[in-house]
Each structure stands twice: as structure tokens, then as C-alpha cells.
Length: 106
Image 1 (tube, rainbow, N blue to C red):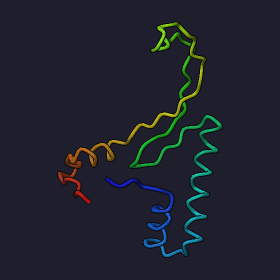
Image 2 (image 1 turned 180 degrees about the horizontal axis):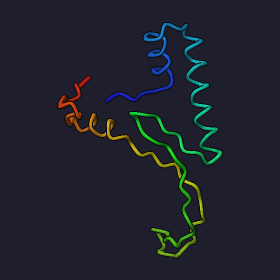
Image 3 (image 1 turned 135 degrees about the vertical axis):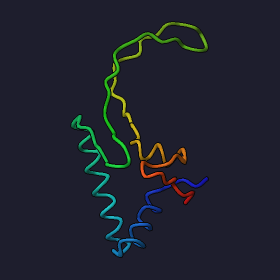
Image 4 (image 1 turned 120 degrees about the horizontal axis):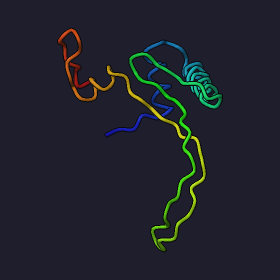
């Protein structure tokens, strides 16, 4: 299994869109920066056909130190949540689309 990296995304943009590698890298960085800024402001980011990124607030709770069993407070925090779209779920599970077609293994 291969990991998708920034470099591999830049290469895909370069090959498919036809921008230079430098322009492709700048485009990708601009997109990622826009997504991060929206999430930092507490906004949801919805990418049609892919999924939605959002921030969820977790309240304070008690946890345990696994070594000592001692109770320790876990402070409130924000967590990033990703909910895949139904299209992405269907593609991952190789399920048929509404038109009856299945996704290819590509």
C-alpha cells in the first residue's frame, strides 16, 4: 500500500493539469492553507463527492493512567472529524453506484 504525499499530489497536478511542478506545488499549498484557515475559524469544509472536515469540541472528562491506574483529568479540546461522502464510502467498499455501476479498482 502506498501513502499519498504532498509530492505525489503535486506530481498528479503536474501531469493532469499541465501546470509546471512549481505552479502545481503552489496551487496545492494554497488549497491546503485555505482548508486549514477555514478549520481554524471553526468552519466545516465540504468537498463534494469526497467528504466533510469539521471541528468537534470534546468536554473535560476523567481518564486513567494505564500504568498506575490513577485518575487524571483530560482537559477540553477540539478534534478534527472527517465524514466521508456516500460516493467515497461506495468507492472504498466497491459498492454499486446509483446507476448500477461499480467502481473500478484503479
